[in-house]
Image (cartoon, rainbow, N blue to C red):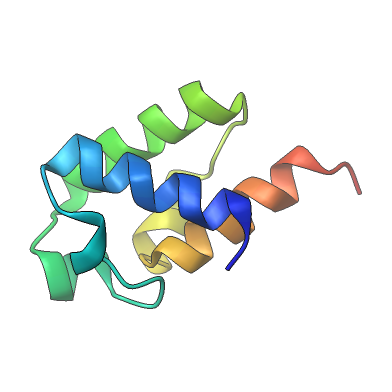
Length: 80
């Protein structure tokens, strides 16, 4: 997995008190780890702060995996 995805996994682990070993890149954060919409919003804000990007909250609510969060960040870091 990419460096961005590994950093996202580290942020999720730190923010929600989960061991990195319990987080798979393809896990649905709501279904597999019990996060709700407020948790996802908190995560989005933290990722925006760390990576210096603006993420679409609706995208995160629809795509709730670490891998997809990393893709969204990558898309926002690299101009089209």
